[in-house]
Structure formats: C-alpha cells, structure tokens
Image (tube, one colour):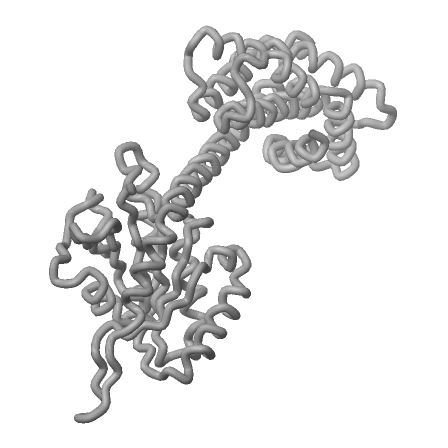
Length: 388
C-alpha cells in the first residue's frame, strides 16, 4: 500500500511527542521528507516498520499570535502539497489530540484544529484523547467530542473514531499507576482508515485545485469585463464592435489555459466554437435593438454601450468557465462541439437580453452609471447562473 501521511495536531502540552514516540518506538527517525522551506513549524517522522509517516505540528497556544502561526504552518504545508512533484506530501489522515484532563476546552480546541485543517474536507479524523487516566470519565469525554464535532457541521462526517490513550506509564504513587493503553488500537485504526484516507487526500487536493482554478478564471472574466466596458464607452459605432473581438478572444484563451485545455486541433475547434457562438457583433445588435425599443430609458449612449459590451463579455466568460470546468473534470469531451454551442447560446439567449435590460433599467432609475464593470461582474453572472 502507498505510504500515507498522518497529521498530528493539538495544543501545547497535550503530549503529541510522547504519543509519537509511543507509536513509532525507538526506531523512528526524523526525516526531511517534503521539506522545501515549509517545515519550519512541522517535523516529519517515519519508521521502516510502519506504512505511514507522522507529521508533527507546533503546539497550539493561548497566544493568538502563536496560534495564528501554528494554523498558518499547517495551511502552508497543505497548499504546498498540491504543487507538481509534491503529490505524495498530501495529508491522508488527521489525529486531533486533545487533553483528557482539560475536557472543558474540547469545543474550542476542536474548532481551532478544524480551522487549521480546513483544506482537507473529506480526510478521516481520529480524535486522540491523550492523558486519559480516568477510566470513568472516558465515556463522557467521548460524548463531549462528538457533541463538539456536531457543531462543526462541515467536518462532523470526517470524525471516524475517538480513542482515549495513555501514551506512557503514569505514576500515581509507589503502588498505583496507569499503564500505557490505546496505542495499538490507534495504530490499527489508522492502518484500517489509510486506504480511505489516501483516496480522500487525492479528492481534496483535486477539489482545492478546481476551486483555485475557478477563482483565477473569475478574475480573468472580471478583468475582461472591465476592459470591454472601458472600450465600449468610447464614442464609436458599436454595431460592429470590432474593438471587442480581441478582448473576447484573449479571455477565452486565458480561461482555456487555466483549465489546461491543450493546444491540439480538437481543442482549437472547441475554442473556435465558443468564439463563433459568442460573436460580439451579433449578440450586441440584438441587445441594442431590444434596449432602444424600451420606452423611458434615459441613459447616455456611451453608458448603454458599455453595459451591453461588459454584459456580453461577462456572459461569454461565465459560459466558458462552465464549459472548461466540465472538460477538466471529465464530465464532457472536448469533441462535443454541439454541446458547447448549446451552452453558449443559452448564455446569450433572450433571457440574457432580459437580464441586461433589467440592469439598464435599474441604473437608469437610480441614475448611478458609475462602476459599470463592477456592477455587471457582481449582478449579471448571478442572474445568468440562476437560469442555466
């Protein structure tokens, strides 16, 4: 089985080091695995006898500054794990270590640990209740853990087990002591969950990349929309809209690059089909004729042109994001030209013109014709998405 990575996280003094020593034994070794200047606050341990590595984080403390640094270190490791060549550094399983002698802190501790590991949305979590010396309190402590996770709705389904442990012999007096326990159960449970964790880690990285691509893509659409608004506001005949063609094409190509649509002949046909359907001049003529027919619209021609141009480029951008994302996720094929034409046509349909009309009417009523690009980027894509 692929060697997985277990992230160990918890407050200072919770006993993470003792736990790791107890799990890996004397043969454990500190390793430089995955280090690239990002492990200042993380130590990585492994043993030839174990199929998983352990990544130990700096302890969380009461100080907000130190707490922020601890959270940031985990987040930085997590984000670095999506980079090329770092695929095997992703987190596959998480041990939330909480102090069994400080049960009142469970809710706040679990909340902070969840913040640090927020990127790993489906990776299994084992809560390790360290210093679990009181046998009568263990059932109550487990219940408190489950209640705390229930309030963290995003992560409650990730909690797989809660295991009380005594990592090393705890001496009460000369004749009484609490022996180590729970360690073999923790090792066995970790091994059982690791295949699921490896798949979950891959899935979470994939979703993070997809989310990041969408954010980058939307920034391209925002920039392109603003550029279109600026160009169209210039008092030139807009019916042909020749000046907008390069903006539209540049936007589509930039989005294709973000979603790793290759440069094969098939991809060129695919991109050309988007350009063909989204030809600015055709859509603009229809929008202009519709808007000019509306009685009572009192808005400068340059502003009207800017709204129409920005709206069209925004719609084409949103349509392209939708199409490229489907290709990237494998839900659609790059050869499905008819499908992409249908999608883009729906983006520039009569409903689109109705939405643009509504934007124009609102701006005319309020008299606010400033920041046209910002208004379009915020309002129009929401309306278009709601109809698709």
